[in-house]
Length: 385
Ligand SMILES: Cc1cc2nc3c(=O)[nH]c(=O)nc-3n(C[C@H](O)[C@H](O)[C@H](O)COP(=O)(O)OP(=O)(O)OC[C@H]3O[C@@H](n4cnc5c(N)ncnc54)[C@H](O)[C@@H]3O)c2cc1C
Image (cartoon, rainbow, N blue to C red; front, side, top):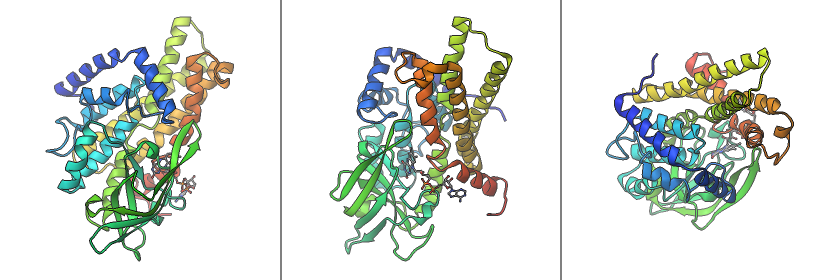
């Protein structure tokens, strides 16, 4: 299989590159300050999001008439360019995923309420799927929504590990709407106002300096129009949303950037490595390229309307695995500075931070064990264990 950009995709990439070059060191510092203040190491709503909106990179590839004209490949390349330059695309990915869901499955009312705010990034979103007793086994979820006589919903339950909920205007929430239903039957998706009475959000801090959240719903009133798709039939939508999430880059791009900085350093400083180290570096470069191509393959399949669950899981499995190996290798190669906080060596500090952060990447979006199960069943056609 060959991946080539068409003329428009190449021109859009080159144009974005010139804008990325204009994102100055001062802008970068301001962005990192904002992320630290917000306890969000991957979203910078005032410094970075307006820049994103101005560049028009959000909404590419949504089903017409929504969003902006442009292919999924163009979106993939834009995200890759930004991530590779150290500009975090997480907030954008989250917004894109919700936008795509609403454009594809949402009612006209809900889509026209939200999509303009997604396109100008004035509203932000969190995905509330996992619960304390329903992580890998998401179908065990217990958060329930009961219908009022006028068709609205009242939601009770708890979500866990919700990334970005403390910054979100809306929580895109998977609930059980049919009380006696089990597993994938009777599930619905609701767009819940994060500031509605009865919603409480508490911090949960995880390795790598991230804040996620526990979200509590206590008799939260949700209007009928907040339902996405058909009541009780959310699982088919969720499967597509999860495939989309799993095809995001989980650490590969950051690992490539760190490795490039390290290679630049050894070149400039004339550092000689032993043969084994050069071999390791060569292998990392090949594996990171494979990770990149897997991501691109998921996008290409999606564009052709072909299923890509197996490839999405391979990408989700491979990204964190290679990221963790690169991070550990760099920390070892950089020595004591990378084991010391505030060493004054930015590359060593970033490698150390990434070593901690990359650890959780094999849990987010479904653990590595679950990805292996999906690959075994959906790609290799093996029976369930
Ligand atoms: C930093 C972070 C951010 C997150 N953000 C979000 C978010 O925004 N929204 C959201 O909804 N969720 C989010 N999650 C939750 C994440 O999806 C779950 O943590 C993940 O799916 C694992 O679920 P669990 O933590 O309940 O672990 P468990 O499901 O309890 O798993 C525990 C262990 O058992 C293994 N295991 C479980 N079942 C099987 C099986 N069938 N076969 C083999 N091994 C198995 C797992 O691999 C794991 O090692 C986030 C998690 C983290 C750490």
